[in-house]
Amino acid sequence: MRFADIKGNDEIKRVLAGMADSGRIPHAMLFYENEGCGALPLLLAFYQYLCCTDRHDGDSCGKCPSCSKVSRLIHPDLHFVYPVNSGSKISSSAKPSSESYLPYWRELCISNPYFLESELYNALGIEGKSGNIAVSEAKFILDKLSLTSVQDGYKAVVVWLPEKMNAESGNKLLKIVEEPPENTLFLFVTHAPEKMLQTIFSRCQSLRVLPARKDEVASVLEGQFSISPEQASVYAGISGGSVGVALNHLGEREEYNEFLDLFSDFIGAAMGKDLMSALEAAETMAALDSREKQKAFCNFAGDCIRKIFMVKSNMAQISNATEQELPFFAKVAGHCRDTFCEKALGCFDNAAQLIERNVNPKIVFCDLADRIFIYI
Ligand SMILES: [Zn+2]
Image (cartoon, rainbow, N blue to C red; front, top):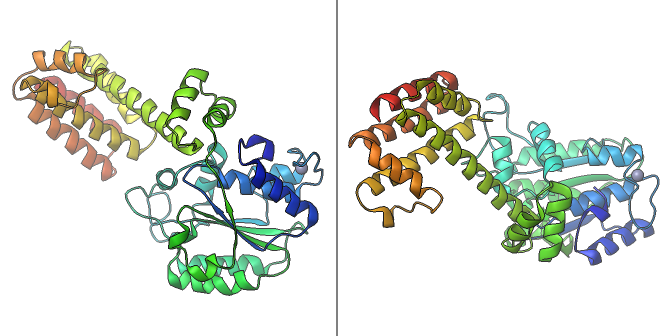
C-alpha cells in the first residue's frame, strides 16, 4: 500500500511522511475513523514508507523487498492484534488469538483493507459472536517486542479496535505503551475512542481520519476494486465517505442477486417438473463458498417463501417483496398447492440446521430438492 493508493486525507499523509522523514515519530499513534474510511490503509502506507529502502516523492517505492513484505503483510517486524473469538476455522482446543487467525486476517486485509468490523468476523468465521482482545494478546505483544527487530528498522504493533480490550489486557499493555523499547511503534485504529481504556488513549497522539469525498470514494471503487463507473458513482453516493461501507453495500447487493437467481432457478425447475434442473440448482447451493453462505441462502429462501405465502393470501402489499421479486413470487403463488409454503419453510429451516451440524451439504440440498419437487 502506497500513500498514492489512498484518496483523500492528504493532510494526514503529509504529516505521516514528515514524521518518517524527520525521524520524529510518536511511539503511540491513534487513528480515529468512521468504519471503512481507510485508517488501516493509511497506517500500512505509513509503515511501508518508513521501511522502504527507496523512498521518493514523498511515497514508498512499492517495489523494494521491504515494500513487498509490508504489502503482503509478512514483514517480520509488523505485528497485528485484533478482536477474535472461538470459531470453526481454528481447532476447538486452541485458544482464539490474533496469531491463530493470521492467514484469514492477511487475506481479508489484502483483498479489502477497508473492511468493516462485521466483515472481519465473517472472514474469521466467528459471525454472530462479538470479538474481543484478551489478556493473552497483551502477553503476545510483550513477547514479540522483546525480540530484537529482524530487519534493523522499526517494529510496529497494529492494534485494530483497542476498544475491544478489557481492563486487564489494557493495563497489561499500558506499561509497554508508556515505555516502549527503542524503535517500537504502536499504531491503534479505533472506531470508538470513548470506549478505549483512557490511560492508553491519553498516551497516544491522535489523528482523525476523515471521510472521503464522493468522487474520491468512486475513484477507489473503480481503480482498485474494478467496479463500473455507474455503480461506483451510485454506491459512493450512499457511502457516507467510507469506501468500506460502499463495498459492503455492493457485496450485499451482489449476494442478494445471486441468491434470488438461484432461488428462482430452483423453484422454477420444481414448478416445471424438471427434476434434473432442480437437482442442478441444489448442486449450486451445495457449492456456495462456505457453510455460513449456505445457511444464509436457506434463510434467504425462507424469507422468499414467507413472501410467497403473503402474496398467495392476497396480502402482496404488505409482503415486503421488492419490485424485482414480485412477478416471480406471484407466479409461484398462483401455481403452488395451499400446503406448499408451510412445508417448504420447514424444509429450508431443517436444511439450515443440518448445515450447522456439519452434515454433507450435497446430501442436504439433494434431499431438499426432492422434497420441494414433491410438495410444490
Ligand atoms: Zn520500497
